[in-house]
Image 1 (tube, rainbow, N blue to C red):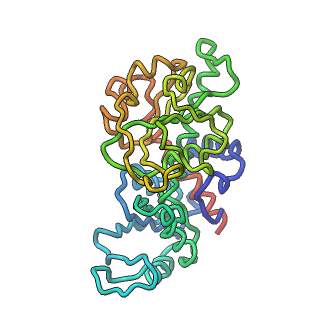
Image 2 (image 1 turned 90 degrees about the vertical axis):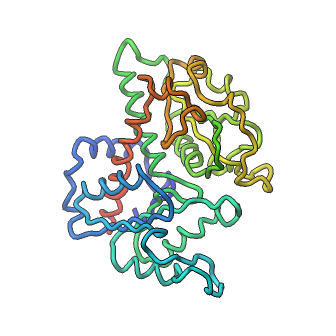
Image 3 (image 1 turned 135 degrees about the vertical axis):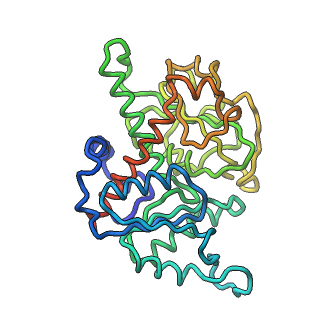
Length: 331
């Protein structure tokens, strides 16, 4: 695997899930793959789970790890072509990227959407320069439009819980596939669409029934929403749900391009509370974290025994290890 940005890069999902469970049982069993190899993790934006889980995964595989915070301790980088660099940016990505590539074997990049120019964000301008000029395999640690490491961890979490339910006669589902609901929830800041984009993309490829619910105007790009059922009535969407994935996202600008990146609805009735969860099929709550309590979800829901946010976060290490393992195998 030479790059990792979408579900297609991973290939057969059943095979990937089997591999993930094997890696989870034997996290240090592939250290020869990473011996004398170096991962460079480049952060244009803040991170907690991605930083820790990806670094831990690489260390599990025997790799050396270099972490670069672009906006803290490095030269400020210019990303636009054809500019006169007479401002506060001392180095251009076109020189910095091949230099970075010369110091490592794999590169992970984290670079959020600016949310001011949809065309620029959805062209993945920054990360694609790393792919083009680094000379190294590159994977996404969340880009302007996707967060596949998170989506893979989400899928692992759903798979594990569903198999656990199936194995117990007292909880065994009567349906063949779980109903998974991606629900918009309110937030005080305009957030990118990367997490919901990837979650929708991956669930469309998985053996689940996906419903996406949000206020009108928050429609995800069709290439990510795919064949999911779109339901504007949140209560109707949550009925019989087995997994509830709450996430805020700003306007994707699909129906109204001029609203791209804006907050166009602050309806607090979309906050996930115990009443919302009572509409489900004794469902499980999920969120990628960090989460704003009282906005996205209430304390009693996220602290309940039907909250999967902690095992979900723990599986970030596993998703990263599978991805890095496969990239090392392709070197």
